[in-house]
Length: 185
Image (tube, rainbow, N blue to C red; front, side, top):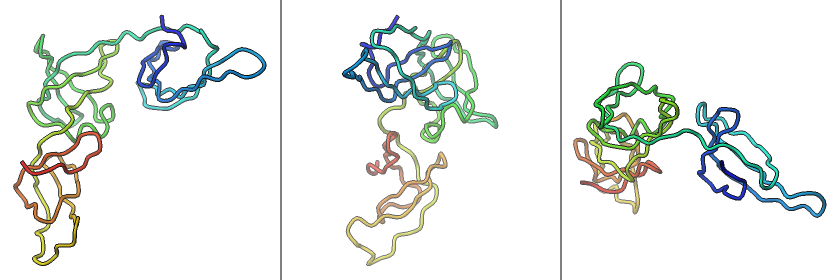
């Protein structure tokens, strides 16, 4: 069991058999009456954010979550196919479950997946990935304004801004948290 004193950003709790992640919280001690905790919770099954208020010291359940070591295999018509590194079992995860994180997946990438009652909820990506540029306009000679960038489409379909000197076919390092260009490889 978890108490309101355990609250912190990123903590996962269970209310009415639904897992939630704490997005934001605030302890409030009014002059009159008991203290309470105002929270913003993200439903981990559908992504909606709700606000909830708990009395100070109130107890709630801890969700039955586990992490598994997975390997990304490929993208099929309905989603992404992963393989469990222990049982070698393959299963598919829909596009909407992973959201923007799916655009950073590279074939053969090993990562950690968060599971809730046998259903995939989220993946932990490495801080950066190396992707190949499939399309970008050539840089114009003399167009050397400091910090100038151009759009580039990567092998996963992700579009980022890269410096003018980067060309098609080159591999670049991309930050998975912000989606920004980090450098050439």
